[in-house]
Every structure is written in C-alpha cells, then in structure tokens.
Amino acid sequence: MDKNQRQTTNLPNNLSILRLMLIPLVVICLCFPGRTGSFLAALFFGLAALTDLLDGFYARRYRVVTTLGKFLDPLADKLLVSATMITLVTLNRIPPWVVMVIIARELAVTGLRSIAAVEGQVIEASTLGKYKFIFQSVTLICLCLHYEYLQINFHVVGMVFLWVALVLTLWSGWTYFRITKKVLF
Image 1: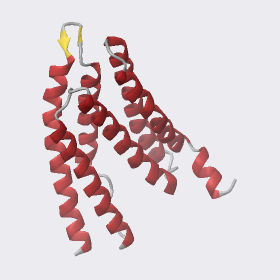
Image 2: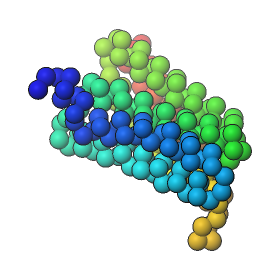
Image 3: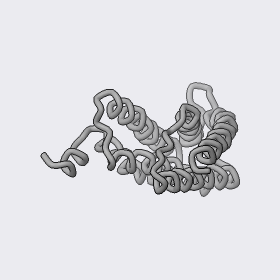
Image 4: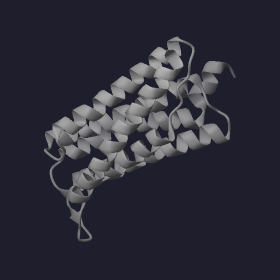
C-alpha cells in the first residue's frame, strides 16, 4: 500500500472526514424549528466533537499520524465550530460579536501556524487549546439544544459556558502568539 492509500484509509483520517460530513447535518437540523431539530443538531454536533477526541487519541496511541490528518483534523474542528456558531447567530442564540472574536482567533492562530510551518517550525496544539475546544463543544451542544429538558434551561447553561469558552479562546490565542514569537523571532 502506497503512502496516499495509507493516509486515506486510516481510522483517524476517516473520523476527521466523518466530522466534516456531519457539519451539514448539524446546520440543517438547526434550521428546523422546534425541539426535534435542535435535539438532532446537538446530537450530531456531539458525535462530531467525539470524533475529534477519538481521532487524536487513536492517531497518537497507534502512531498513525499522517500529513493529511495534520491538515484535516484542525480544518474539521474549525469548520464544525464556525458553521455551528454562524448558524446559531442567524437563530439569535449567540451574540454575533462573540462569534466574530472566536473565528478571528481561529484564523489568526491558523495563520501563525502556517508562517511557522513555512519557517520549518511546528507549533503543536496546546493543552489550553484542547480545553478551549472542549468548552466550545459543550457550549455549542447546549446552545443547539436551546430548550428546557429535564428542568434544565440549556440556553442559559450554554451562555454560561460560552463566556468560559471565550476566555479560553482568547487565552489560548495569546499563548500561540507568545510561542510563535519565540519560535520565529
């Protein structure tokens, strides 16, 4: 089996591809009014977020990290979070300025990593960045659910998590800027 076949047939890459394929389902389900669409959107988002945890764990544990995977995994994460947040803005479930800040941070960090890569440096994902993704995921699952279930108002819970996710997003972004400055200058 040649290198290209190994990259496209390994489990972590397939999980990243599955995550990309779940994004339209999340967005479509959010567009259906009422509890059912919101519940399904949260379910699909949760499944997509779970694939992120599984693909990274599996790739590192079994040493099947590929160039394709290094590209697909962060791309799928950013698209999943961005598409879901933008859709939630259209539904008035999340403040637009928060989404703009989070997406701007993602683009800035991606740019920094790209510059570092051109210079032959690799800036690994930080632990703080992983916590950021977990809090963003919990936030978005709650905001997708939106309604009250089991006497829990998931919109309110989601908004609380959103502020924590925003702080972690900014903090981890600042950390990447500091690391990149040390690596490149």
